Length: 205
Ligand code: SF4
Figure 1 (cartoon, rainbow, N blue to C red):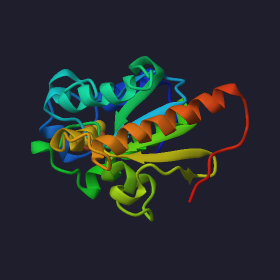
Figure 2: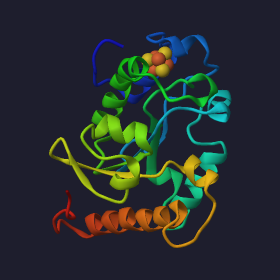
Figure 3: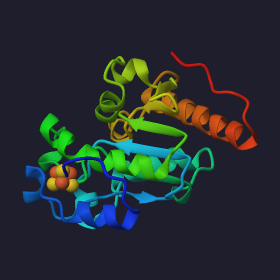
Figure 4: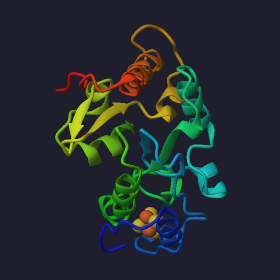
């Protein structure tokens, strides 16, 4: 895809489904475009599809997706309330981190999705989307749990990727899981505040 173009969701999805702009097109089973509410206030962005996502064409439906559901459900958020997608729409073999070239080839789709959805807040799940959105931010361990201003109108809120929580299942205070449950409460509180009316934006760094 050569440049970000604001198409309808259906046209954009079709363009992605036919895409061969990077080498991931040669190893994917399905393109995982994203799904959810097309007018969502909350956009969640992960790194890339995993094995189950590649097999089904749906984002976050494997074990990490089930963990993400658990995190969202803990504050009453449902899949149909948010939009979920990834930096790259095709699975990197072995779930490796997408290369810079792959991310650069694919992120025009993400740019177009953001333009269509116009979310109020973007949750960046893990280092890869955080670095793409906030190249000057510290690593995810330091940046998580903080609202950042992005392009002057949208907030970005980094959180741990749910696959990280699967590797560290402890719920003890200070653990990734404990911090993530705290973080999603901050997101929900902010969404609730916005729903009540314009009372300003939260503090940001
Ligand atoms: S990862 Fe993105 S740019 Fe690469 S082939 Fe898939 S849709 Fe196209």
